[in-house]
Image (cartoon, rainbow, N blue to C red):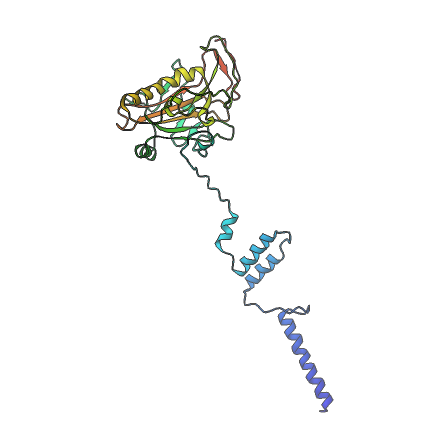
Length: 325
């Protein structure tokens, strides 16, 4: 064999080797690629990712790259999730903005049901001439049995006086208030003006068949005389004169008299009860229990009707008229 023929043969063999290597590595397009130890399934998944829409954000692209490389930490997935857990945060309140307590403990999701206490608005009997009706009553507690939790009772026992007001709901409605009242919490001096407060559903009208003529009062959940809270929007709701003076006041005076007579403390909660998205509550629940004697002297759980004899109220808006009844 001549030297020229030998050279051609070596060149042919070299060319075949190069072409074979190129076909094996898939680099005929001239862009050399490293062989990967990944499986066929991993290769297919990676090819699918690479074919996805290029419109993802830089952050998403970066996250995908780190996921592919195995360097993304658990923090990335946690950051992408909603951090809200829907839990309630409670604070001890004094007045105005300082007296905020977060959301719905229960009644906002379904105003007809106080979920934590098992009381349905639909289970309240129709008004029959008495301004209130006892709830969970028995022979031992004819005025009803309150449903305070052990934590609430222990807080009153350990801390003494405190007050907590829920923030207004999404409709601007006043919600529940909880307080431990005693000699230290009672209102002092003269009560201030609250006329600038207009609770949800406030459409005032005057009728000559109502004492004082005004249909609506700005009803305190926790009476000023018991806690000293006055022009606190979270402690005022649209209530009838009948609710304020005939329904709630006798029970507030019962608590006040007990405190004056004994110097002891009372755990007290007031819960407005709304029908669906109506702005004016149908009534309020009052729960009270004396602390030092574990409810032996003072104990009640009543529902007071938010109505006015001879007046017709549109609870959805608060508008009203004489009923002619």
